Image (cartoon, rainbow, N blue to C red; front, side, top):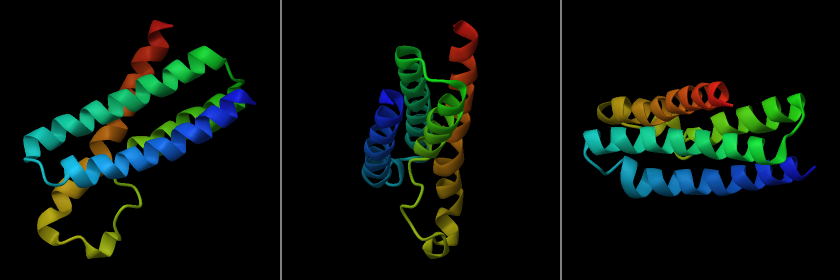
Length: 117
């Protein structure tokens, strides 16, 4: 039960931080810094979920559904931030990078931390 509560709190706080990071840094920063920021975000989310799972030891269903799935959701910092149809064509590549790179970094981090346990 504690894991479910902690995972939902992590999701709410992580979603708000992701939106703040997107607005304040990832979209206005130069593309190279934005790329680094997306990788760091994905890695931080991956380590956070791994730490939460290691600390509270949830069962398999909670680990997969509330752990890994919520982590994947939070790892996309701009998810739900903008209406996809309103993004100008010139900004589509940055938007896709901000959507996809942290998810890949999250998955790689999860696999790396699972292999270290």
